[in-house]
Length: 111
Length: 114
Image 1 (cartoon, chains in turn blue, orange):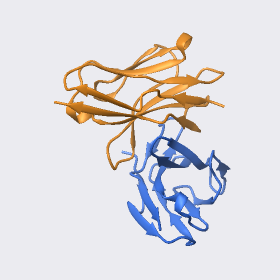
Image 2 (tube, helix red, strand yellow):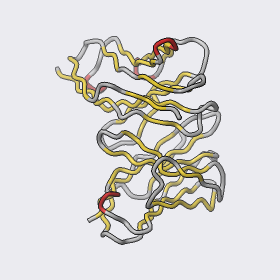
Image 3 (cartoon, chains in turn yellow, green):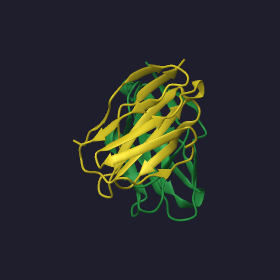
């Protein structure tokens, strides 16, 4: 089974902190994605990557950046966390033959 | 740009009753359509997908969905709901290629009562 692992299930950070959310997939997928999920808004795409060192903005990239130094790892970075970034963050990977697989999510609270 | 509408935020059904969750999409070309399920505290799991061919698609856990191009719809159905089906369901549409950028609906939360 393909696995997408997010390093933390729950995180609490202070306003202004730099926050790293890590995601690792074990199936050699080309594509990786970061979404945030908020009640009533569904999933919104923050950033995605089709290859190592390659990234593209999604629908809501402001306040976020990403890093993909290795194919299996895709990191989401909150440069200076704010309370409106309190949310559930979901990582996913996909390939042409397999489709999307999601991680279990990281619930981030910024206080 | 593609978009997805799930008009029902919350649905309650009795165990054993039939279920239909609505999904309408907007996309200029042939869409790639998906239904995902999310149990509380979990990530999303793929129920079924439509790329082409037979417009009635069978998925896991006894779910099916029908693609109706004339109505721009991809409704999810199940003939008899089980208590374990209580979850949130997301419809999604993808660009051609299917497994690249996907746009999700806002979700429908299903409650199952005994």
